[in-house]
Length: 287
Length: 294
Image (cartoon, rainbow over all chains, first blue to last red):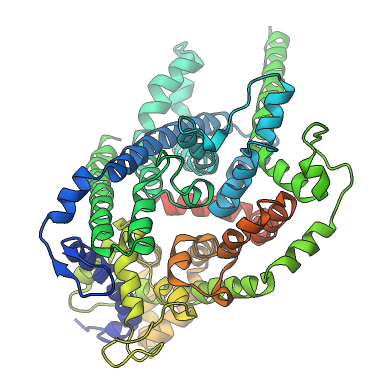
């Protein structure tokens, strides 16, 4: 068979960039994770020392816990709301497109603008939230300056931007379910809740899993909101893995140490992706 | 009985719109605050006791004032340049590579494609340190010698902001999937007519690939225009700032002028909001295409 060797030339620019800026860095970061590298002197191999230090680094442990909390809550809430909205907006009704557009809109805004917007809403002195509390006679708080509240308040813009995306994917998933199932269920006398529980939910399982993995990867990398709204404070209550990579790598120039943090992030996201492949295949066989 | 059913359905319809209306208001409320704050006077923003959602005097001049305070012209120029160069370049290169992997035959095709897919799974923040070091040591740029030492390489240049964006495992993957769906007879026929592989790509596959290219263009524009983390680390001078970095730099100033800060946020978000209203359908289809098939 004829072979189009010219293809090598065509994929060359893409491949060179990929190797230089994705593939090589992925290997390099693993190497750098085993080194002491402060940017001035050459990297020095120190074995697993960075990882031992990580395990004892209270700020990093805090960052991991925060990231996991952020992940579970934002992903859980945005998926639940996204699914509910998708079910409600699945029927062809007048104005449905408007509502879908409204819920999706936050997705096209940059996280920087979104974070600034919420920073203003949370302003303890003049923000809308404080004003609202005043008007309702409720006690106002320091919001983002309150160590018990800050992490949860930072999650709100995350959920606000994610739920529309999840809704749209769920809507596409709902389109693939044949209306026949519901017809039969209705004839059998199944209620709306029963239909949801026994038809919609099981048939959406592959989509649910897919959304779960996608939004997990997204929320494990949370950085912009943290950088803009809290810089990890107060008292490290909102710091995350990505923010610690930034802090250690580019503020303290502890590049070896920050690389070992990157490897931790790489491993978590890598594990999630592998689970996706394994489970995703199983899911599609099930349908 | 039928009238009863109809009444129930109508009641359900009303309930639906009331419920959805409230939800939409809640979702839009932060945006409403952003817009109304941007139109209030400085004094009004500070008056908490006499708070009203809508401005007492509408100050459209805030938008002009905010543009004057920082070098927004420069930031917009940078962002427009970086975004359009990244979109045009990556679309062409990704489509070309996708075409190669879908249509052309060459040794190691599948192995090379699989190796490329690793890029889809990698979280970009985890690569930022080596990326920084690699950009810093691009030979013969930014005062570097042949071995990439001594200078700053591509850091703080347009090269750093554009070149890494041109490759894209996901873009190549999407294009390949799409081109696999095009009947191979088209390729064979064009080749028999004497067209080379590149001509077939330009005259047959590129025009047929419009839908997937539109999706990719949307994904890439939103990603590059809104990106913060990467340009934050790779640039340092004021003249290289993108709009997102501009917003962040503006923050310290605007903490005392939320009216101007919100106006700036709107200006930065406006291009994509307008694009979203015009191409709403395509935006949502893109989300699905990137989701389901990815």
